[in-house]
Length: 260
Image 1 (cartoon, one colour):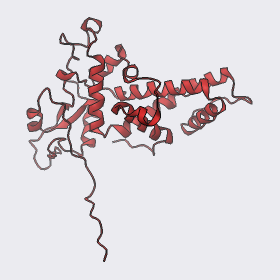
Image 2 (spheres, rainbow, N blue to C red):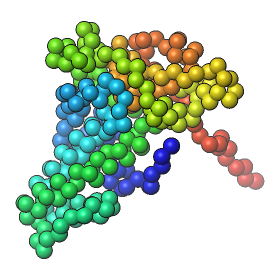
Image 3 (cartoon, rainbow, N blue to C red):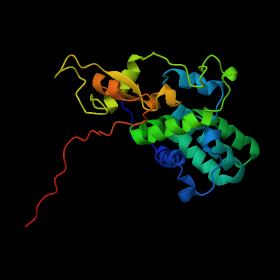
Image 4 (cartoon, rainbow, N blue to C red):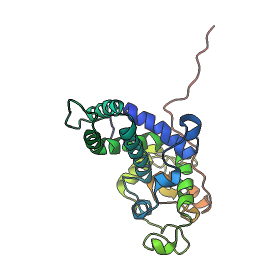
């Protein structure tokens, strides 16, 4: 599995705000938002292309980037020198070369700097994904709210992606990188019963990829809506059941020390 350096301060702060946006608690901490969930999830052809089969640029990446872009665009218009200072800091962090001016707080330079932020904002969106992807309860909520966002879209508008029932067509495309990512997140175990799926203890146990929010419930085939199960748990899970695996891997059991 690939590893990255420590997440940037921008990514950590953004992850908290995205978590709250998904859970519906953003306004309690941050006040009014620039976009609502439906605007950020943005139901269009690009949405369905991502939702139809697994891709490394997920719906959560896209959702996060929409918020980041809207925030920085608003910041560009309102913040002046503070916008320039923070933007320069991010560009430096991600090693993006850019032109500086003696008087950087001009409309043209602010526009230029926003363009230069395009790659860093995508990198931040990916960092946010890496932080939040492990929270399967949050991913379930994201999947449920995403299903609600496109439930009234006419099938005739996106016939290549939608079944006559209005649900996304089923894809059986499971790339190796996806299996590896899910296996790593679940520590090689069934997300429901924690049975080892490494094949070491029971070679007959095979990985089954499961939609957390089933296709029949409006689920997508985006990586954010997938988990691995053993054959038994996958067979027992109802097609209308949005339950997510409860097991979380920790490296050891914590036992508080006793003091006399």
